Every structure is written in C-alpha cells, then in structure tokens.
Image (cartoon, rainbow, N blue to C red; front, side, top):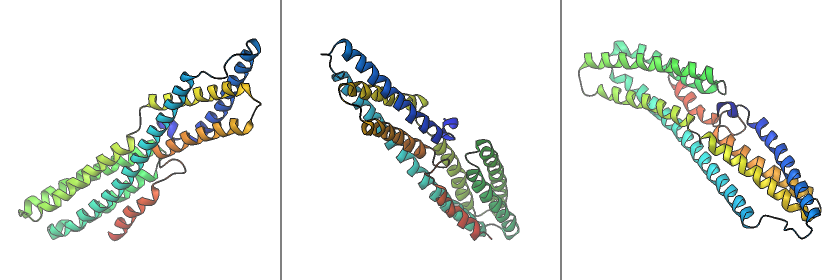
Length: 256
C-alpha cells in the first residue's frame, strides 16, 4: 500500500489504459462470436448485471470508507492541537525551576510532530521524526513526574493527565494514518472494474463503435479509483489535509 500511495497518478493512468485495452478486447471477442453465430446475444444477461452491481457496490463501499477515514484524520489533528495547547498551559502549575526547561522540550516536541507529517511521502524520514517525538515524550514525562513528585499536591497532577492525553493522541493519529482497506479489497475493486470494461466492450459488439462510451467508461472508472486512493493517502496527492497542520503551527507560535 505504501508503494501505491506514492504512485497514485501513474497507477490511475495505467488503469485507464488497461480499461481501454480490455474494452477493445471484449468488443473484438464479441464481434468474432457474432460472426460465427449472428443470433448470439450481445451480453451475458444476469451474470453481467451481477458483476456491474457488485462493482458499483464495492466502489461505493471503498469510497465511503476512505471519506470517513480522512474526516477522522482531520478531527485528530484538531484534537492534538487542543491537547498540546492545554498541556503547555498547565506547565504553569509546576515548580518555577522546571517550567522553562519543560517549555523548551515542548517547543522541540511540536517541531518534531510538524516535521514528521511534512516529511511525507518520504515514509522513512517521517518515521525518524516520529521516533524523535517519542523520545521527547519520554523526556517530558520523566521531567513532569519528578516535578509533580517534589511538589506533592493535587493541582500539579493535572499536568500528568494532560501529558498522558498528549501521548495517547500521537498513537491514535499514527494508527489512523496507517489504517487502510486490505490490499485484497483494492485488488478486487480493480479486477471488477476490468471485468466491467470487458463486458461493456463485449456488449458494444452489436452496435457501431462509440468512442464517447468507451472513453467515458474508462475515464469515470479510473477517476473513481483515483479519488478513492487520494482520500486514503491525503498527504501524497492532490487531496491534502496539510492545511489543518496550521493549527499545530499556531500552537507552536504561541509557545515563543
């Protein structure tokens, strides 16, 4: 899936060409059969309808799932910005001696979070920045536990709860970013679309060639799968959620 994420446009173009070729293959086979048997039916009847119905159902299913996942990722960015902002403000509850070191750790942490998502689609660079952020999380947590222990009051424990939420949201965002439909679902979708192209070409053998229908079918099917993949990987193509990272940027600016 990661390879596909960085090659959405080439994959969609290749699929468009394949759809044209498969339609042409279906048409030629249909013409050949009609030459041998002029009374042959132009389509496959119930089986043809079932394949097109299944194709439409799977396209709708994968599109709906992709749209839902991209909305969830947007919501998580907002949540993380709010959680980090709250945790930073609660540093004021800690002893004065540890406040400035903690604030500096927070600045570095937010910088690493922003850098991790800006690095995409370079997955290895993004993982390196995520690891850097995880190390800073441990440093911030250890410093906060020591400060809260020395302070010994209930108010400063609010710092730990906000830090715990800050750590949890990073895991939630990472899992959300890695959540995609199984590869076999995408493969089945492509297979059904190609099967639909073959049947469309086969069915057109009974009439004069219509480039409008041929190109229209290939364009719409390739565009639908392109859109699904764009929604699945909203940091590598034309559909992007980078604009919401501005919320984290604003949180970082408030720390200066």
